[in-house]
Length: 253
Image (tube, rainbow, N blue to C red):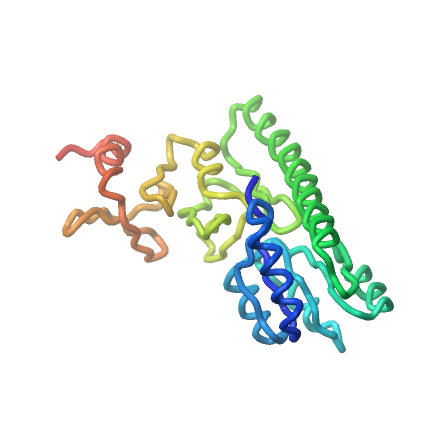
């Protein structure tokens, strides 16, 4: 089981120390990947780090923070509110918080909150797996690889495979770069799509890239292998994949 990646937004040093102490003793279930003392700094960290969970220990005077979360191009992080005010729990659950921790917080309360996050994540993943498997089975029965099911935010989209120029790893996410210039971020990693995409057209040229042969306009073999695509992007072919890539595109040295 991968640990829950979390960031802490708190103006109180005590909250930060308690959560980091918890992380030290429970590294199997929690990894703190950033912290901030205010919402503005926290927002920057959220967009950069893409956490699974936010521990929120600040008083929010408006809903701008939650509006920002709704506009993220990746899965909205789960929220655990922390406060010394019981009444703040109403606001927390209004915004779909996983849990509310009343100060002074203790390790038992944190453990319960983390496992609620893990359980919710597993339920969402299971639901997505069921839907994606159903779509893939339908494609197989129709002997069609025209679409790929992409788990995107809190929904699943069908993307025409012919429209995919390449896929790029972004940590635990995958970014689909499409012919019309748009980018779609999936909550699945690149390895999962390497197994799903049609092997007649798609090839993993690098740890970070799967490319669509149909959109290559030029291959350069000067100072390494590079593929240039119809949208102007130039991507490297990893050295250890060059021989297999030659076979894939049926080139002869």
